Image (cartoon, rainbow, N blue to C red; front, side):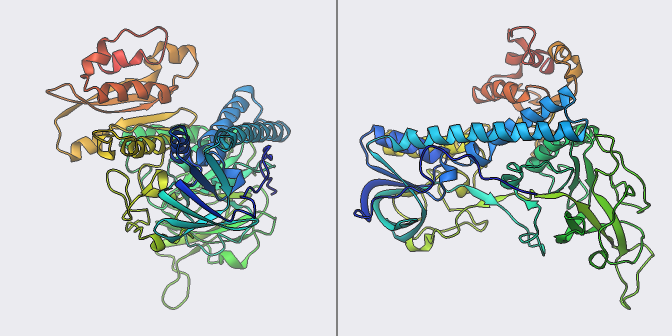
Length: 547
């Protein structure tokens, strides 16, 4: 399956300082063109400071969100929803056309935003943008490797804003097999995969599962353990899973991918071990060509037997779903197949594409942080204090690289923390001042939450009441023909304090911000119960939710 590089922007692919100026002395150096760094660069420039911004790739001006994260994925999600509503996901021809149009639109949007972000900084007299990979050579010195050679930069203050990169598990073949992608590559395919296996069932993986299911791809999600969304309340997790399964997404729990290799039909073959499967053939996965035809194992919730059945995909084509075949039980000590309740069973899963969605890790590789005296945490993030200062003087870390919540709006708030120290504030704003970080997952029915859920409130020993409202009871949801989902809130019993809210609802990503604002202002639940909202809106459901 082919991929394509995003459309070129109006700036050259590689930008560097002239060869006559290989050394730069500046007030501030920002490593990485992400949300926090680019906002800080513009602010410093407006204050008359000289700024150098180093970005490793010309395809990443503006940062992760604009190029390979929030915005391109939401563009594709909206296109997929439109394809589902229009019925464009019903035949191979219409699916391909809808997917091709969606990719084209996504590339247009990201190219335009990348161009605007580049010029927003590079066109300022006080800012120099250098395209190249930076690494520290001392406490206040960095070398940037550009296409025209190294550029040395000495800066009074340095800000690390390099973001995060996909975490790739140590699975044989995962880095070398064609057809295995991170989210970046999967969002830039020229051809839509008919079958997709997703390794990992966190919210990033689920967004892609929902999106590709809407396009008409048959999606199978592999989850390492037995519990779906273990950090969410059981009723909320069950509602999210039911929604995805209604879209045709299949789940396989207790599944460990042991190896990945090219399949005989040009796809991808995964050797998967599933705990709790009872018996099967002794044929080895890696010794037999991938199966073909219509015979498939129904893997929905497969934790018991391995009887062969035919699955039904969202498009009605039973050949669309990943093929499960060649099941083998865990061998006994003498090497013979063990058929009496083995600990696990092995089988092959054949698919067109694989998405690795096992989380993201701070992007610190190659920075040579030790040369500047910058330390890392046990989890590999840049170690910072509540002011985002690193262990080296006059070096800060903003955004995903510092181990905080991986959201663009947190990177922006990190900018506020840093700027409050540079602008002479009497009392700097700190990470501890940050309140009630909300989140949204853009599934077919968006899921948004803020604060504590019920299991967290219970674990904290709080005295609370649970408020629930089915989305079907919201008039605007019925008018929009989007009645699926539920709303849930946790309220402290004696004080009426809002402890948290979980909204699996159309437009939840907008409504959750109202709840956050109320929580930030310490407004009791009665404030939202009695607030006058316009009608008909989803927001007015808060009247009934908090009643």
